[in-house]
Every structure is written in C-alpha cells, then in structure tokens.
Image: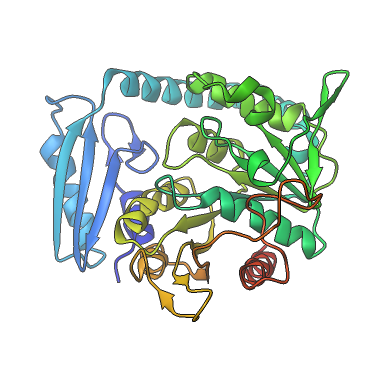
Length: 371
C-alpha cells in the first residue's frame, strides 16, 4: 500500500542536480496526493528554464513507480523569490556550519549545546509532543488542554506552550485569568489543573491582534524555552497553529526530538489537509504518535442516539495514509462545568468522571505507553 511516508522515503533518493541535496530535504516535492496506486504531486523548480527539468521529472516518476505506483502525475511550479532566497540562505548556513565544525574539531557544537536551556539540553528527560492539524476549527486546542490535564491526572508533570501565537486560546480554555509571575527576567508559568501553562495570550493586552513576521515568531518561541522557569517536566505539550507555516517549521527545527499528534474531524477534507501536517512531520523525521478524531459523533442526551454530524472515516483514513494508529475518537460536545463563579470552572476541560473525560484518560495512557 502506498503511503506518504513511503513516498517521501523514496524521494529522499532523488537529488536535485544543481543544489546537490535530495528533494525532501529541500522541500521541493509538495502537495502529494494518493489515489489508490496513482500518485499526484507538485515538483518545485528554481526557474522555468532549468536545464534538468525533464530529467528530474522522469527521475521522480521512475522512483515512485519503483515503490508500486501504477501512474505518477508530476505537476510543476516555480519557487517565489522569497522562497529562493530562504533556500539559498539555508544551504549557505549549512555549508558554513560544516566548515566551522571541521575547523574547530566540533568544539563550537559542544559550546552551543551547553548554552541550551535545561528543558532542551541532552540531559533533559522531558518528552515533547506537538499537537497539529491541517486546518483550524477541528478542536486541536481542546485536545491539547484535555490531554495535558489527563496526563497530570495520571501523575505526570506537564507543561503546555500555546504556540498558536496568532490564535492563542489555551488560557481561556483552561479558565486561567491570572498572568505569569516575572522575577529578575525569569518568567514563572501559570499552573492550573496540575499543568504549567505559557501563552502569547498572557502578553497581549485586551485580545489585541498579533501582527508579526516569521523571525519574530521564532524568537518568541525561543523565549518560551529560555526565559520560562519550567522546573522538571515529564511532558511538554505544544499547541501548534494549524497548517505548516513558520511556527510549525520553527518547532520542528528547534525540537528534533518532538513527537507529533494529529487532530482531524471525520470529514474527508479535514483529514486530507491534516495529511500535509503529517507529511511535514515525516519530512523533518519526527515520529507521529497517532491520530485523534475529534467531533466523531454527536450523542443525544435524551435518547442516546449517535449522529455522525461530520461524516465517517476521516481519522481512520488519515491514520492509514500516514502509517500510524487512530488512538481515540472524541464525540462532539461541551463540558458541563457549572458557572464561571465556581473555583473549578473552565470552558473546555472535561471532568475525569465524564464519558469524554474517560476518553482523554485513555488517550493519555496510550501516549504514556508510546513514549
């Protein structure tokens, strides 16, 4: 059976002649789609006049037919100027790093490792889990906060970074109203339900819009690791923005040891776009823990009848395509947590003794087993 993982592994054997790196490393093979044993993908070029254009297209077709594709359709496109500049800069930096490493006998690399914050050091035992989705509105943040609380209920020390910097929602979902404490430039995260939390939402006044570009986003993420006193953690959960933009890429580069949990609804389109986030994880050699199908059905509170509001099979199809497991199906609904005046109130955290709370405990136990 053809999967995204098998296709990317095959394309790692195809080198771009001019840039001297494989297509996956350069992110030139994109928008991969599988239709039974037929593959459609987009191959990116530096310009329309590349001399080896047909040769490379044919190499891709031959390689993918070699892993079982009956037909390979290669669409072509050209990188934009900014993408070309970024790619050239990345290759230049990699070359310079190799030269410096040879000259210093590896001493520079050791120095940079020693400068890493405790959470990112080689001695750290913290397991990083990135919660991702292909599109917004599938309940990714809801899964993040409930998984984190479920892990804490199982006795784990848990932190959450709300890395969805444009669409931060974790503090509100968990019913957090206070701000982090800052002492001598060290930030102490807010703790609720046994989970330590940091979010861009703590640093934005009155829900103002965040208008930042890529490098500034990356800097904020680094600050969340370097300037926050997390203490010892068993798990750090990162709520990523939907899709495969700057923040997701920064997280993948900053945390090579991170594992990924993909959230989708049963709808075929949600699963289709979630596959891109999964392909990015595979492309950056991150392990996929599994798939969570959210909003799997709606159950009538009066008669118990289950209605598949968003269709069937999206989670299972996504898991099959990414060669991983469907870990849990979460029904559509909202927790019954009383009123905002109650001390334990939160808009989105399910109590442990509810049916949905038990499903999140099942997910937490599965995550513990796989780490």
